[in-house]
Image (tube, rainbow, N blue to C red):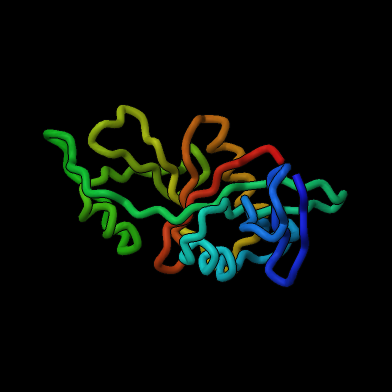
Length: 168
């Protein structure tokens, strides 16, 4: 793998690929104590490039944990028979209107767990995220989500951003 650095972040190129061609991934790095700001990541994801968008969180020893970021567009589903959605959080209205079942995510350290029609177990854990949260909070969440085989989705401003842990 070849890595080049520029004002946008780290660009990763697969072996035997010219660095003049499109990068296979871009990595934005942040200190674990930084407050989150997804503006660069969202801009990259919305551009629709065929490359991974990754976030690298650096701890105080210089070690890095990597996450792959994606924007989620929720498809329509339906509630299971004999179920009623009692969630009245306005931030979750979009998912309720699309037919997702929303339950408390407290036991997983997030705001909500989300089910679609087919799921017996919640595939997603949702956390309402604001700019005053730091990356350490997010790392904790993703670690728990990964351990219980769930996808962490951050509700950030008007976006749904999934983050999955990955090896470098």
